[in-house]
Image 1 (cartoon, rainbow, N blue to C red):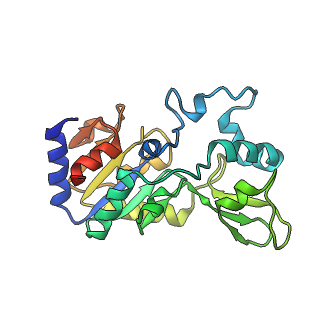
Image 2: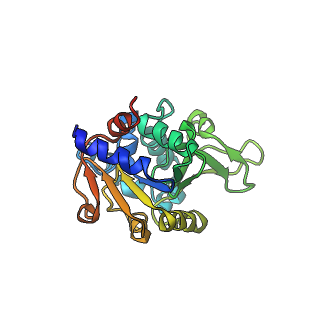
Length: 245
């Protein structure tokens, strides 16, 4: 790990009271949750069937093949044993210190909230929230995992749908606007664990007008050339070093 870059990041964080973090799948890989687009990611796994992972987590597939959708969803997208890593914990601690004003995440695992972050814009939703399509009753992830086949509502028998943005569905406008506003008002934007190729989420960094842009990602991104600091090390290790843990 580059000590000089870690020190530079520490100085940037120490010098700001208005930081926003924007993260993707790479934030949670050190918690044991695979990403989507790397060589070993979910989208590159051979599922032994003709339907691609992208199709299986589409709105159309959910409606037409709900049982198959849930078989894939429970196997590949819910990780009940996953715990927050040092990136999640550091961001929660920096929020408590008044430095981090918001976390914007593309992840659906709920680990930022589990670590203690309060202002989280989970723009793709969360596996921890599930609702009956008929009466709106709320259910946690346990209900989904413990239900054989398609989970149904205990109150009305309606079909339960995860509060996750599937392909063909629109992002929540309120969350998107909140994330946009937070980034636009930030002095420092920390971008981590994302290749910045998923739209419209990745377009959010265009709203940043602050003084310092930091990118922490194992591979190169299209925004590297605009960054004040680029770090290629695993993000949990980076935050562990910055926090002195």
